[in-house]
Image (cartoon, rainbow over all chains, first blue to last red; front, top):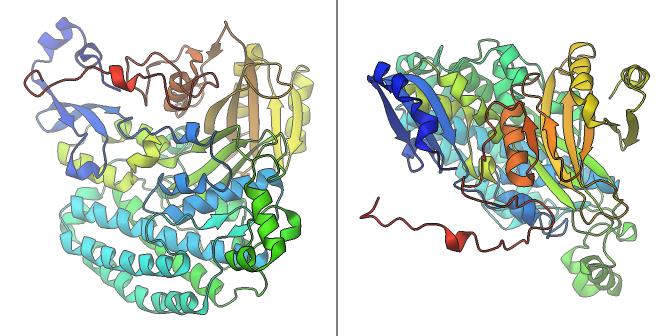
Length: 408
Length: 165
Protein backbone atom coordinates (compact mmCIF):
# COMPACT_ATOMS: atom_id res chain seq x y z
CA UNK A 1 0.00 0.00 0.00
CA UNK A 2 2.25 2.95 1.02
CA UNK A 3 4.82 3.54 -1.64
CA UNK A 4 8.51 3.97 -1.15
CA UNK A 5 9.47 7.39 -2.54
CA UNK A 6 12.07 5.81 -4.82
CA UNK A 7 9.39 4.07 -6.88
CA UNK A 8 7.87 7.47 -7.64
CA UNK A 9 10.77 9.71 -8.46
CA UNK A 10 13.34 7.53 -10.17
CA UNK A 11 17.04 8.24 -10.07
CA UNK A 12 18.51 11.62 -9.28
CA UNK A 13 19.68 12.07 -12.90
CA UNK A 14 16.08 11.70 -14.04
CA UNK A 15 15.04 14.19 -11.41
CA UNK A 16 17.48 16.82 -12.62
CA UNK A 17 16.17 16.48 -16.17
CA UNK A 18 12.56 16.50 -15.07
CA UNK A 19 12.63 19.19 -12.41
CA UNK A 20 9.49 20.74 -13.89
CA UNK A 21 7.59 17.58 -12.99
CA UNK A 22 5.71 17.67 -9.74
CA UNK A 23 3.91 14.99 -7.80
CA UNK A 24 0.38 15.29 -6.51
CA UNK A 25 -1.29 13.06 -3.99
CA UNK A 26 -4.86 12.53 -5.17
CA UNK A 27 -6.74 11.03 -2.27
CA UNK A 28 -7.19 8.93 -0.20
CA UNK A 29 -9.68 11.50 1.06
CA UNK A 30 -10.73 13.42 -2.00
CA UNK A 31 -14.38 14.24 -2.74
CA UNK A 32 -14.08 13.04 -6.33
CA UNK A 33 -12.75 9.63 -5.43
CA UNK A 34 -16.05 9.22 -3.52
CA UNK A 35 -14.40 6.56 -1.40
CA UNK A 36 -10.91 5.95 -0.12
CA UNK A 37 -8.44 5.36 -2.89
CA UNK A 38 -5.21 7.13 -3.59
CA UNK A 39 -3.56 8.02 -6.88
CA UNK A 40 -0.08 9.48 -7.02
CA UNK A 41 0.00 11.70 -10.07
CA UNK A 42 3.11 12.88 -11.84
CA UNK A 43 2.25 16.18 -13.46
CA UNK A 44 3.80 18.56 -15.95
CA UNK A 45 1.78 21.66 -15.16
CA UNK A 46 -1.72 20.23 -15.51
CA UNK A 47 -0.79 17.40 -17.85
CA UNK A 48 -0.66 13.90 -16.34
CA UNK A 49 2.64 12.16 -17.12
CA UNK A 50 2.01 9.17 -14.94
CA UNK A 51 -0.49 7.84 -12.48
CA UNK A 52 0.26 5.31 -9.80
CA UNK A 53 -2.84 3.95 -8.06
CA UNK A 54 -2.40 2.98 -4.45
CA UNK A 55 -5.27 0.93 -3.11
CA UNK A 56 -6.09 -1.18 -0.10
CA UNK A 57 -7.30 1.46 2.35
CA UNK A 58 -10.65 -0.28 2.60
CA UNK A 59 -9.36 -3.83 2.59
CA UNK A 60 -11.47 -5.81 5.04
CA UNK A 61 -10.57 -9.39 4.23
CA UNK A 62 -13.93 -10.33 2.73
CA UNK A 63 -12.46 -13.43 1.12
CA UNK A 64 -11.00 -14.60 4.41
CA UNK A 65 -14.35 -14.01 6.13
CA UNK A 66 -15.95 -16.05 3.36
CA UNK A 67 -14.02 -19.07 4.61
CA UNK A 68 -15.67 -18.75 8.02
CA UNK A 69 -19.30 -17.85 7.30
CA UNK A 70 -21.76 -20.30 5.84
CA UNK A 71 -23.36 -19.92 2.43
CA UNK A 72 -26.37 -18.05 3.80
CA UNK A 73 -24.47 -15.82 6.21
CA UNK A 74 -21.94 -14.62 3.67
CA UNK A 75 -24.65 -12.83 1.70
CA UNK A 76 -24.46 -10.03 4.27
CA UNK A 77 -20.79 -9.53 3.36
CA UNK A 78 -21.58 -9.33 -0.36
CA UNK A 79 -23.90 -6.41 0.44
CA UNK A 80 -20.86 -4.47 1.50
CA UNK A 81 -18.85 -5.06 -1.66
CA UNK A 82 -20.51 -2.88 -4.25
CA UNK A 83 -22.78 -1.09 -1.82
CA UNK A 84 -24.55 0.95 -4.47
CA UNK A 85 -26.16 -2.14 -5.97
CA UNK A 86 -26.13 -4.74 -3.18
CA UNK A 87 -29.04 -6.69 -4.67
CA UNK A 88 -26.92 -7.60 -7.69
CA UNK A 89 -24.14 -8.87 -5.40
CA UNK A 90 -26.62 -11.02 -3.47
CA UNK A 91 -27.89 -12.51 -6.70
CA UNK A 92 -24.31 -13.13 -7.91
CA UNK A 93 -23.24 -14.88 -4.71
CA UNK A 94 -26.17 -17.23 -4.54
CA UNK A 95 -26.02 -17.81 -8.28
CA UNK A 96 -22.54 -19.24 -7.77
CA UNK A 97 -23.48 -21.13 -4.59
CA UNK A 98 -26.47 -22.76 -6.27
CA UNK A 99 -24.29 -23.70 -9.22
CA UNK A 100 -21.94 -25.44 -6.80
CA UNK A 101 -24.76 -27.25 -5.01
CA UNK A 102 -26.72 -28.01 -8.15
CA UNK A 103 -29.88 -26.38 -6.81
CA UNK A 104 -32.37 -25.36 -9.49
CA UNK A 105 -34.38 -22.40 -8.19
CA UNK A 106 -38.09 -22.01 -8.91
CA UNK A 107 -39.32 -20.02 -11.93
CA UNK A 108 -40.87 -17.45 -9.61
CA UNK A 109 -37.58 -16.92 -7.82
CA UNK A 110 -35.80 -16.54 -11.15
CA UNK A 111 -38.17 -13.78 -12.16
CA UNK A 112 -37.98 -12.01 -8.80
CA UNK A 113 -34.19 -12.14 -8.83
CA UNK A 114 -34.16 -10.81 -12.39
CA UNK A 115 -36.36 -7.92 -11.33
CA UNK A 116 -34.26 -6.98 -8.31
CA UNK A 117 -31.01 -7.36 -10.27
CA UNK A 118 -32.27 -5.04 -12.98
CA UNK A 119 -33.57 -2.52 -10.45
CA UNK A 120 -30.14 -2.66 -8.85
CA UNK A 121 -28.59 -2.00 -12.25
CA UNK A 122 -30.75 1.10 -12.68
CA UNK A 123 -29.82 2.27 -9.20
CA UNK A 124 -26.11 1.68 -9.82
CA UNK A 125 -26.11 3.44 -13.18
CA UNK A 126 -28.07 6.34 -11.70
CA UNK A 127 -25.40 6.88 -9.09
CA UNK A 128 -22.60 6.42 -11.57
CA UNK A 129 -23.87 8.86 -14.17
CA UNK A 130 -25.13 11.20 -11.45
CA UNK A 131 -21.77 11.32 -9.71
CA UNK A 132 -20.02 11.68 -13.04
CA UNK A 133 -22.23 14.71 -13.74
CA UNK A 134 -21.53 16.03 -10.25
CA UNK A 135 -17.78 15.73 -10.70
CA UNK A 136 -17.88 17.52 -14.02
CA UNK A 137 -20.04 20.31 -12.66
CA UNK A 138 -23.67 19.28 -13.14
CA UNK A 139 -25.11 19.30 -9.64
CA UNK A 140 -28.80 19.43 -10.60
CA UNK A 141 -28.39 16.33 -12.68
CA UNK A 142 -27.05 14.47 -9.65
CA UNK A 143 -30.15 15.39 -7.66
CA UNK A 144 -32.43 14.11 -10.42
CA UNK A 145 -30.60 10.80 -10.28
CA UNK A 146 -30.61 10.61 -6.51
CA UNK A 147 -34.32 11.24 -6.22
CA UNK A 148 -35.01 8.16 -8.31
CA UNK A 149 -32.57 6.08 -6.27
CA UNK A 150 -34.68 6.99 -3.27
CA UNK A 151 -37.73 5.51 -5.00
CA UNK A 152 -35.76 2.32 -5.65
CA UNK A 153 -34.67 2.17 -2.02
CA UNK A 154 -38.32 2.38 -1.01
CA UNK A 155 -39.11 -0.57 -3.26
CA UNK A 156 -36.26 -2.61 -1.75
CA UNK A 157 -37.32 -1.65 1.76
CA UNK A 158 -40.87 -2.83 1.13
CA UNK A 159 -39.57 -6.03 -0.43
CA UNK A 160 -36.99 -7.09 2.14
CA UNK A 161 -37.03 -4.65 5.04
CA UNK A 162 -33.64 -3.10 4.38
CA UNK A 163 -32.91 -0.09 2.25
CA UNK A 164 -29.18 -0.34 1.84
CA UNK A 165 -27.77 -3.72 2.83
CA UNK A 166 -30.50 -5.93 1.49
CA UNK A 167 -29.18 -9.48 2.03
CA UNK A 168 -32.23 -10.53 0.09
CA UNK A 169 -31.35 -13.88 -1.45
CA UNK A 170 -30.94 -17.22 0.28
CA UNK A 171 -29.67 -20.53 -1.00
CA UNK A 172 -32.48 -21.87 -3.16
CA UNK A 173 -34.70 -18.84 -2.87
CA UNK A 174 -35.16 -15.50 -1.24
CA UNK A 175 -35.81 -14.12 2.22
CA UNK A 176 -39.28 -12.83 1.37
CA UNK A 177 -41.68 -13.44 -1.45
CA UNK A 178 -42.64 -10.53 -3.66
CA UNK A 179 -45.95 -8.98 -2.58
CA UNK A 180 -48.69 -7.23 -4.59
CA UNK A 181 -47.66 -3.97 -2.90
CA UNK A 182 -44.11 -4.28 -4.24
CA UNK A 183 -45.42 -5.18 -7.68
CA UNK A 184 -47.57 -2.06 -7.58
CA UNK A 185 -44.59 0.08 -6.52
CA UNK A 186 -42.46 -1.32 -9.33
CA UNK A 187 -45.28 -0.64 -11.82
CA UNK A 188 -45.44 2.96 -10.62
CA UNK A 189 -41.67 3.24 -10.94
CA UNK A 190 -41.73 1.82 -14.47
CA UNK A 191 -44.40 4.37 -15.37
CA UNK A 192 -42.71 7.40 -13.77
CA UNK A 193 -39.05 6.74 -14.34
CA UNK A 194 -38.94 7.35 -18.14
CA UNK A 195 -39.89 10.98 -17.55
CA UNK A 196 -36.90 11.53 -15.28
CA UNK A 197 -34.61 9.58 -17.57
CA UNK A 198 -35.67 11.72 -20.53
CA UNK A 199 -35.11 14.84 -18.42
CA UNK A 200 -31.67 13.59 -17.51
CA UNK A 201 -30.83 12.92 -21.14
CA UNK A 202 -31.99 16.38 -22.08
CA UNK A 203 -29.91 17.90 -19.30
CA UNK A 204 -26.59 16.31 -20.12
CA UNK A 205 -26.43 14.41 -23.42
CA UNK A 206 -25.89 17.52 -25.51
CA UNK A 207 -24.65 19.77 -22.74
CA UNK A 208 -21.64 21.58 -24.19
CA UNK A 209 -19.64 21.63 -20.95
CA UNK A 210 -20.23 17.96 -20.20
CA UNK A 211 -19.54 16.78 -23.75
CA UNK A 212 -16.33 18.82 -23.93
CA UNK A 213 -15.14 17.35 -20.67
CA UNK A 214 -15.89 13.76 -21.54
CA UNK A 215 -15.59 13.32 -25.31
CA UNK A 216 -12.20 11.94 -26.32
CA UNK A 217 -11.13 11.66 -22.68
CA UNK A 218 -9.95 8.39 -21.18
CA UNK A 219 -9.79 6.40 -24.40
CA UNK A 220 -9.85 2.63 -24.13
CA UNK A 221 -9.48 0.83 -27.42
CA UNK A 222 -11.17 -2.48 -28.10
CA UNK A 223 -7.95 -4.54 -27.98
CA UNK A 224 -6.90 -2.84 -24.76
CA UNK A 225 -10.27 -3.56 -23.21
CA UNK A 226 -10.05 -7.26 -24.06
CA UNK A 227 -6.39 -7.61 -23.06
CA UNK A 228 -7.09 -5.72 -19.83
CA UNK A 229 -9.99 -8.03 -18.88
CA UNK A 230 -12.56 -5.21 -18.97
CA UNK A 231 -16.20 -6.21 -18.79
CA UNK A 232 -19.62 -4.66 -18.50
CA UNK A 233 -20.43 -1.14 -19.68
CA UNK A 234 -16.73 -0.23 -19.89
CA UNK A 235 -15.98 -3.02 -22.36
CA UNK A 236 -19.20 -2.40 -24.26
CA UNK A 237 -18.38 1.28 -24.69
CA UNK A 238 -15.17 0.15 -26.37
CA UNK A 239 -16.92 -2.14 -28.80
CA UNK A 240 -16.65 -5.49 -27.01
CA UNK A 241 -20.08 -7.02 -27.55
CA UNK A 242 -20.03 -9.11 -24.42
CA UNK A 243 -22.93 -9.32 -22.01
CA UNK A 244 -23.41 -12.38 -19.83
CA UNK A 245 -27.17 -11.87 -19.92
CA UNK A 246 -27.01 -12.77 -23.63
CA UNK A 247 -23.86 -14.90 -23.77
CA UNK A 248 -24.65 -17.22 -20.87
CA UNK A 249 -28.33 -16.56 -20.15
CA UNK A 250 -28.84 -17.11 -16.45
CA UNK A 251 -31.97 -16.57 -14.33
CA UNK A 252 -34.79 -15.80 -16.77
CA UNK A 253 -33.05 -13.39 -19.13
CA UNK A 254 -33.72 -15.67 -22.09
CA UNK A 255 -37.45 -14.91 -21.75
CA UNK A 256 -37.16 -11.18 -22.27
CA UNK A 257 -36.77 -8.92 -25.22
CA UNK A 258 -33.94 -6.46 -24.65
CA UNK A 259 -30.96 -5.04 -26.47
CA UNK A 260 -27.33 -4.70 -25.40
CA UNK A 261 -26.21 -1.14 -26.09
CA UNK A 262 -22.64 -0.89 -27.38
CA UNK A 263 -20.45 1.91 -28.67
CA UNK A 264 -17.10 1.91 -30.38
CA UNK A 265 -15.44 5.17 -29.34
CA UNK A 266 -14.43 3.97 -25.86
CA UNK A 267 -14.18 7.39 -24.21
CA UNK A 268 -15.88 8.70 -21.07
CA UNK A 269 -18.78 10.03 -23.12
CA UNK A 270 -19.35 6.62 -24.70
CA UNK A 271 -19.36 4.95 -21.27
CA UNK A 272 -21.87 7.53 -20.10
CA UNK A 273 -24.14 6.93 -23.10
CA UNK A 274 -23.92 3.14 -22.70
CA UNK A 275 -25.02 3.42 -19.09
CA UNK A 276 -27.91 5.73 -20.01
CA UNK A 277 -29.02 3.32 -22.75
CA UNK A 278 -28.72 0.34 -20.41
CA UNK A 279 -31.18 1.93 -18.02
CA UNK A 280 -33.79 1.98 -20.77
CA UNK A 281 -33.11 -1.69 -21.48
CA UNK A 282 -33.29 -2.61 -17.79
CA UNK A 283 -36.58 -0.80 -17.56
CA UNK A 284 -37.85 -2.89 -20.48
CA UNK A 285 -36.79 -6.09 -18.69
CA UNK A 286 -38.42 -5.04 -15.42
CA UNK A 287 -41.60 -4.08 -17.24
CA UNK A 288 -41.83 -7.47 -18.96
CA UNK A 289 -40.84 -9.43 -15.87
CA UNK A 290 -43.13 -7.76 -13.37
CA UNK A 291 -46.23 -8.47 -15.50
CA UNK A 292 -45.31 -12.14 -15.97
CA UNK A 293 -44.14 -13.34 -12.56
CA UNK A 294 -44.96 -17.07 -12.48
CA UNK A 295 -47.14 -18.38 -9.66
CA UNK A 296 -45.84 -20.93 -7.21
CA UNK A 297 -43.38 -20.99 -4.35
CA UNK A 298 -40.35 -18.71 -4.27
CA UNK A 299 -38.15 -21.21 -2.43
CA UNK A 300 -37.28 -24.72 -3.46
CA UNK A 301 -39.10 -27.32 -1.37
CA UNK A 302 -38.28 -28.19 2.21
CA UNK A 303 -37.63 -31.75 0.99
CA UNK A 304 -34.59 -30.59 -0.94
CA UNK A 305 -32.91 -29.56 2.30
CA UNK A 306 -31.28 -26.60 0.65
CA UNK A 307 -33.18 -23.48 1.53
CA UNK A 308 -34.18 -22.10 4.90
CA UNK A 309 -37.96 -22.37 5.32
CA UNK A 310 -40.07 -19.23 5.54
CA UNK A 311 -40.44 -17.75 9.01
CA UNK A 312 -44.16 -18.64 9.18
CA UNK A 313 -43.29 -22.27 8.56
CA UNK A 314 -40.55 -22.20 11.19
CA UNK A 315 -42.86 -20.80 13.85
CA UNK A 316 -46.03 -22.67 12.98
CA UNK A 317 -45.11 -26.12 11.66
CA UNK A 318 -42.96 -28.83 13.17
CA UNK A 319 -41.45 -29.69 9.74
CA UNK A 320 -40.39 -26.10 9.28
CA UNK A 321 -38.84 -25.94 12.74
CA UNK A 322 -36.89 -29.15 12.24
CA UNK A 323 -35.78 -28.19 8.75
CA UNK A 324 -34.60 -24.77 9.92
CA UNK A 325 -32.80 -26.27 12.91
CA UNK A 326 -31.01 -28.85 10.81
CA UNK A 327 -29.99 -26.39 8.14
CA UNK A 328 -28.35 -24.02 10.59
CA UNK A 329 -26.49 -26.83 12.36
CA UNK A 330 -22.97 -27.02 11.09
CA UNK A 331 -22.75 -30.81 10.77
CA UNK A 332 -26.22 -31.46 9.33
CA UNK A 333 -26.67 -28.54 6.99
CA UNK A 334 -26.59 -28.37 3.25
CA UNK A 335 -25.07 -31.00 1.05
CA UNK A 336 -22.16 -29.46 -0.78
CA UNK A 337 -19.90 -31.38 -3.16
CA UNK A 338 -16.12 -31.21 -2.75
CA UNK A 339 -15.78 -29.36 -6.01
CA UNK A 340 -15.02 -25.95 -7.43
CA UNK A 341 -17.17 -23.76 -9.64
CA UNK A 342 -17.09 -20.28 -11.05
CA UNK A 343 -20.46 -18.58 -11.31
CA UNK A 344 -20.78 -15.07 -12.70
CA UNK A 345 -23.54 -12.63 -13.47
CA UNK A 346 -23.60 -9.40 -15.42
CA UNK A 347 -23.55 -6.99 -12.49
CA UNK A 348 -24.09 -3.27 -13.20
CA UNK A 349 -20.35 -2.70 -13.16
CA UNK A 350 -19.32 -5.70 -15.20
CA UNK A 351 -18.77 -9.38 -14.71
CA UNK A 352 -19.17 -10.12 -11.01
CA UNK A 353 -18.26 -13.71 -10.35
CA UNK A 354 -17.46 -15.94 -7.43
CA UNK A 355 -15.03 -18.81 -7.56
CA UNK A 356 -16.21 -21.11 -4.79
CA UNK A 357 -14.44 -24.20 -3.51
CA UNK A 358 -16.72 -26.47 -1.54
CA UNK A 359 -15.35 -29.02 0.90
CA UNK A 360 -18.51 -30.82 1.94
CA UNK A 361 -19.28 -28.53 4.87
CA UNK A 362 -21.70 -25.62 4.71
CA UNK A 363 -18.86 -23.10 4.79
CA UNK A 364 -16.95 -22.34 1.61
CA UNK A 365 -13.35 -23.50 1.61
CA UNK A 366 -12.50 -20.56 -0.61
CA UNK A 367 -14.78 -17.76 -1.76
CA UNK A 368 -12.99 -15.72 -4.37
CA UNK A 369 -14.80 -12.69 -5.73
CA UNK A 370 -13.95 -11.38 -9.19
CA UNK A 371 -14.43 -7.69 -8.57
CA UNK A 372 -15.08 -5.62 -11.70
CA UNK A 373 -13.93 -2.38 -10.02
CA UNK A 374 -10.53 -3.85 -9.24
CA UNK A 375 -9.98 -4.92 -12.83
CA UNK A 376 -11.24 -1.65 -14.27
CA UNK A 377 -9.13 0.45 -11.96
CA UNK A 378 -6.03 -1.37 -13.20
CA UNK A 379 -6.79 0.18 -16.61
CA UNK A 380 -6.90 3.68 -15.17
CA UNK A 381 -3.18 4.64 -15.44
CA UNK A 382 -3.09 4.05 -19.19
CA UNK A 383 -6.42 5.80 -19.72
CA UNK A 384 -5.44 9.03 -17.98
CA UNK A 385 -2.01 9.35 -19.58
CA UNK A 386 -1.65 12.68 -21.39
CA UNK A 387 -4.89 14.15 -20.11
CA UNK A 388 -5.21 16.97 -17.60
CA UNK A 389 -5.67 16.85 -13.85
CA UNK A 390 -9.34 17.78 -14.14
CA UNK A 391 -9.92 14.79 -16.41
CA UNK A 392 -8.96 12.44 -13.58
CA UNK A 393 -12.37 12.89 -11.99
CA UNK A 394 -14.16 12.41 -15.29
CA UNK A 395 -12.35 9.13 -15.97
CA UNK A 396 -12.80 7.92 -12.39
CA UNK A 397 -16.49 8.74 -12.57
CA UNK A 398 -16.95 6.93 -15.86
CA UNK A 399 -15.21 3.81 -14.53
CA UNK A 400 -17.48 3.75 -11.47
CA UNK A 401 -14.78 2.69 -9.02
CA UNK A 402 -16.34 1.51 -5.77
CA UNK A 403 -13.53 1.21 -3.23
CA UNK A 404 -15.35 -1.34 -1.09
CA UNK A 405 -15.41 -3.69 -4.06
CA UNK A 406 -11.94 -2.63 -5.18
CA UNK A 407 -10.35 -3.56 -1.86
CA UNK A 408 -12.82 -6.06 -0.40
CA UNK B 1 -19.87 -23.68 -23.75
CA UNK B 2 -16.37 -24.96 -24.28
CA UNK B 3 -15.77 -26.51 -27.66
CA UNK B 4 -14.77 -30.22 -27.25
CA UNK B 5 -12.39 -29.82 -30.23
CA UNK B 6 -10.39 -27.29 -28.22
CA UNK B 7 -9.95 -29.77 -25.40
CA UNK B 8 -9.00 -32.67 -27.65
CA UNK B 9 -6.49 -30.52 -29.55
CA UNK B 10 -5.00 -29.40 -26.25
CA UNK B 11 -4.66 -32.88 -24.79
CA UNK B 12 -3.26 -34.17 -28.09
CA UNK B 13 -0.53 -31.54 -28.08
CA UNK B 14 0.19 -31.79 -24.36
CA UNK B 15 -0.39 -35.35 -23.09
CA UNK B 16 0.23 -34.33 -19.46
CA UNK B 17 -2.77 -31.97 -19.45
CA UNK B 18 -5.69 -33.51 -17.55
CA UNK B 19 -9.17 -32.21 -18.19
CA UNK B 20 -12.35 -32.55 -16.16
CA UNK B 21 -15.81 -31.09 -16.16
CA UNK B 22 -18.20 -30.10 -13.39
CA UNK B 23 -21.57 -28.40 -13.96
CA UNK B 24 -20.51 -27.15 -17.35
CA UNK B 25 -17.17 -25.70 -16.25
CA UNK B 26 -14.33 -27.34 -18.18
CA UNK B 27 -11.05 -27.39 -16.31
CA UNK B 28 -7.61 -28.21 -17.66
CA UNK B 29 -4.89 -29.15 -15.17
CA UNK B 30 -1.61 -27.98 -16.65
CA UNK B 31 1.85 -28.64 -15.21
CA UNK B 32 3.66 -25.45 -14.30
CA UNK B 33 6.42 -26.09 -16.84
CA UNK B 34 4.07 -26.00 -19.82
CA UNK B 35 1.78 -23.24 -18.45
CA UNK B 36 3.03 -20.45 -20.69
CA UNK B 37 3.12 -22.69 -23.78
CA UNK B 38 -0.46 -23.85 -23.17
CA UNK B 39 -1.67 -20.33 -22.42
CA UNK B 40 -0.14 -18.80 -25.55
CA UNK B 41 -1.53 -21.63 -27.62
CA UNK B 42 -4.99 -21.10 -26.17
CA UNK B 43 -4.76 -17.36 -26.77
CA UNK B 44 -3.30 -17.39 -30.27
CA UNK B 45 -4.81 -20.51 -31.82
CA UNK B 46 -8.03 -21.17 -29.91
CA UNK B 47 -9.23 -17.60 -29.52
CA UNK B 48 -9.19 -17.36 -25.73
CA UNK B 49 -8.32 -13.69 -25.92
CA UNK B 50 -9.51 -12.57 -22.49
CA UNK B 51 -8.26 -13.51 -19.06
CA UNK B 52 -11.22 -13.07 -16.79
CA UNK B 53 -9.58 -13.73 -13.45
CA UNK B 54 -6.62 -15.29 -11.69
CA UNK B 55 -6.99 -16.69 -8.23
CA UNK B 56 -5.40 -19.19 -5.94
CA UNK B 57 -6.61 -21.81 -3.50
CA UNK B 58 -4.59 -23.04 -0.53
CA UNK B 59 -5.33 -26.76 -0.13
CA UNK B 60 -3.53 -27.09 3.18
CA UNK B 61 -6.54 -28.55 5.03
CA UNK B 62 -8.46 -29.87 2.05
CA UNK B 63 -9.37 -33.53 2.25
CA UNK B 64 -7.29 -35.77 -0.06
CA UNK B 65 -5.38 -32.84 -1.48
CA UNK B 66 -1.90 -33.68 -2.72
CA UNK B 67 -0.67 -30.21 -3.62
CA UNK B 68 -0.54 -27.11 -1.48
CA UNK B 69 -1.50 -24.27 -3.82
CA UNK B 70 -3.72 -24.41 -6.86
CA UNK B 71 -3.68 -21.47 -9.24
CA UNK B 72 -6.81 -20.83 -11.24
CA UNK B 73 -6.89 -18.94 -14.54
CA UNK B 74 -10.31 -18.22 -15.97
CA UNK B 75 -10.13 -17.73 -19.73
CA UNK B 76 -12.86 -16.39 -22.00
CA UNK B 77 -13.23 -16.42 -25.74
CA UNK B 78 -14.93 -13.10 -26.45
CA UNK B 79 -16.13 -14.23 -29.89
CA UNK B 80 -17.86 -17.47 -28.94
CA UNK B 81 -18.35 -16.67 -25.22
CA UNK B 82 -16.73 -20.01 -24.37
CA UNK B 83 -14.98 -20.35 -21.02
CA UNK B 84 -12.07 -22.47 -19.93
CA UNK B 85 -10.51 -22.83 -16.51
CA UNK B 86 -6.79 -23.54 -16.51
CA UNK B 87 -5.29 -24.77 -13.27
CA UNK B 88 -1.78 -25.42 -12.14
CA UNK B 89 -0.40 -26.62 -8.81
CA UNK B 90 2.65 -25.48 -6.89
CA UNK B 91 4.18 -26.70 -3.67
CA UNK B 92 6.47 -25.23 -1.08
CA UNK B 93 9.31 -24.34 -1.11
CA UNK B 94 9.34 -23.64 -4.84
CA UNK B 95 6.50 -21.14 -5.31
CA UNK B 96 7.64 -19.56 -8.55
CA UNK B 97 5.16 -19.45 -11.40
CA UNK B 98 5.79 -17.79 -14.78
CA UNK B 99 3.79 -14.61 -15.13
CA UNK B 100 1.15 -14.30 -17.86
CA UNK B 101 1.41 -10.49 -18.01
CA UNK B 102 3.21 -10.69 -21.41
CA UNK B 103 0.15 -12.49 -22.77
CA UNK B 104 -2.56 -10.51 -21.01
CA UNK B 105 -1.69 -7.10 -19.52
CA UNK B 106 -4.81 -7.41 -17.37
CA UNK B 107 -3.05 -10.10 -15.33
CA UNK B 108 -0.83 -7.48 -13.70
CA UNK B 109 -2.97 -6.56 -10.70
CA UNK B 110 -4.49 -10.02 -10.44
CA UNK B 111 -1.05 -11.59 -10.02
CA UNK B 112 -0.07 -8.88 -7.57
CA UNK B 113 -3.11 -9.77 -5.50
CA UNK B 114 -2.23 -13.48 -5.53
CA UNK B 115 1.33 -12.61 -4.46
CA UNK B 116 -0.05 -10.38 -1.71
CA UNK B 117 -2.53 -12.91 -0.36
CA UNK B 118 -0.74 -16.24 -0.98
CA UNK B 119 2.92 -15.46 -1.52
CA UNK B 120 3.11 -17.08 -4.93
CA UNK B 121 5.98 -15.42 -6.77
CA UNK B 122 5.36 -14.65 -10.44
CA UNK B 123 8.65 -14.62 -12.29
CA UNK B 124 9.06 -11.93 -14.96
CA UNK B 125 6.23 -9.91 -13.49
CA UNK B 126 6.93 -6.23 -14.22
CA UNK B 127 5.95 -4.85 -10.83
CA UNK B 128 5.43 -7.52 -8.20
CA UNK B 129 4.57 -5.48 -5.12
CA UNK B 130 1.86 -5.97 -2.53
CA UNK B 131 -1.36 -4.39 -3.69
CA UNK B 132 -3.97 -4.47 -0.93
CA UNK B 133 -1.85 -4.86 2.19
CA UNK B 134 0.84 -2.51 3.43
CA UNK B 135 4.40 -2.95 2.14
CA UNK B 136 5.63 -3.77 5.67
CA UNK B 137 3.13 -6.61 6.16
CA UNK B 138 5.02 -9.88 6.53
CA UNK B 139 2.38 -12.58 6.16
CA UNK B 140 0.19 -13.79 3.31
CA UNK B 141 -3.21 -13.80 5.00
CA UNK B 142 -5.33 -15.94 2.68
CA UNK B 143 -3.12 -18.94 3.40
CA UNK B 144 -4.93 -21.47 5.54
CA UNK B 145 -2.30 -21.36 8.30
CA UNK B 146 -2.99 -17.66 8.88
CA UNK B 147 -5.63 -17.06 11.57
CA UNK B 148 -8.84 -15.18 10.83
CA UNK B 149 -8.13 -12.56 13.49
CA UNK B 150 -4.58 -11.91 12.34
CA UNK B 151 -1.37 -12.11 14.31
CA UNK B 152 -1.46 -8.66 15.80
CA UNK B 153 0.04 -6.83 12.84
CA UNK B 154 -2.41 -3.99 13.21
CA UNK B 155 -1.26 -3.27 16.74
CA UNK B 156 2.33 -3.01 15.66
CA UNK B 157 1.82 -0.53 12.85
CA UNK B 158 3.90 2.59 13.38
CA UNK B 159 1.79 5.46 14.68
CA UNK B 160 2.52 8.80 13.07
CA UNK B 161 1.45 11.76 15.16
CA UNK B 162 0.40 14.97 13.52
CA UNK B 163 3.49 16.81 14.75
CA UNK B 164 5.80 14.23 13.19
CA UNK B 165 4.03 13.90 9.88
